[in-house]
Amino acid sequence: MKRYSVFAIAREAMRQHAGWPRAWASPTPKAKYDVVIVGAGGHGLATAYYLGKNFGITNVAVIEKGWLGGGNTGRNTTIIRSNYLQDPSAAIYEKSRSLYETMSQDLNYNVMFSPRGVIMLAQTHHEVRGYQRTAHANALQGVKTEFISPARVKQLVPIMNIDGPRYPVLGGLWQARGGTARHDAVAWGYARACSDMGMDIIQQCEVTNVLTDGGKVTGVETSKGKILCDKLGGVVAGHSSALAEMAGFQLPMESVALQALVSEPIKPCMDVVVMANTVHGYMSQSDKGEMVIGGGTDGYNNYTQRGSFHHIEETVRALIETFPMISRLKMLRQWGGIVDVTGDRSPILTKTPVEGMFMNCGWGTGGFKAIPGSGWAMAELMANGHSPLTEEFSMNRFRAGKFIDESVAAGVAH
Figure 1 (cartoon, helix red, strand yellow):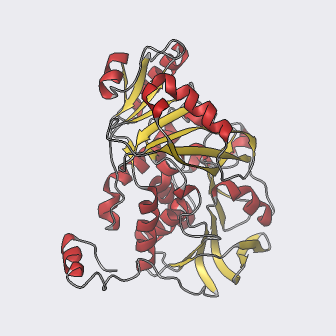
Figure 2: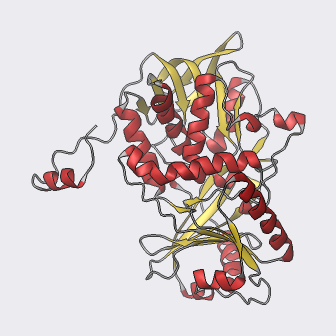
Figure 3: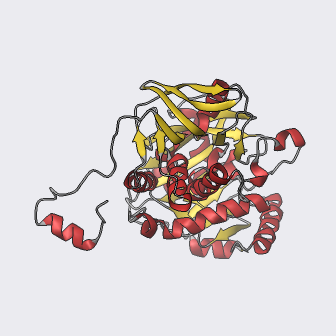
């Protein structure tokens, strides 16, 4: 792998940038791998990367039915935070947040991590009590957050109207080390590092069946032929139920669309991320000046990846009271992604009834922030058969009633 640096840029500038190699290879699939990861989004690529980096497992194929990072990884609003209530959630999300801080250096690829801070607004007395409880829990978990006053919220976000008649701002849960990163760059950085370790990233390769023998996984049937493996990881977000059905078991989750939109670019006016969960809206400003706006999930199960007028109306109408200035903005584009939601709004990282097959899914609206921590934990689970970060997130917790309830901390996922 050619190392990226200021000296490399200067050198290539002298020769019209003709010497840059491809960031990752596009190989023909081999007959068999030690590990096959289905899904070349952020979570799948991170799993492959940490299998190689932490455990030396490099005979790995990452299979993607479309293009690399073309699913939820390229469709989210890039928010990174770890201020969750339950201990297992805080542990994996804080691991992820800490890995984001050094990701650009680790991957030698600028993922544009920006620890600009995240505020979760309290706009009802119930939310005040809930976020104060979360702040106390975070203190015990070693996650740095604090509950701040309305005046402090206004100081951090001057464009905000904190005295709205329906949704006044009563305070906020503030995580100064939260922020954003460039979603495409995260996928590209992991892909480049995986390819450099000798792993195969196979795009335009759809899995059509999971092959088993005597209750053990043996490989997958794909649009490019049969690929055998010793271990199989399913990391396909909203399509996890379909992959599980191919293997002969069911997952306790449902798939719904989550929509987002961006405005025309404007001058810098907001340098933090704001989440207003009472009205199901959140907003930040991108490096290009666009106001990035998201809302709650659709109210019905679907696999739509398009926007709708209903979403624009419901999300923007609520946010305009808190941010009056956005009423004069023009929308630039809108899109949707397919999220996989569990009953307790927490993910599933688990062994399955099929020996040698593992599933990573159920992240709901919080998948992007979890990418490095999820990959780290999933790699450990697949390599060792156990990981302290995944112990509480087994699919069997629903049968045992050991829920990890994050319906409040997950914000817009409920």
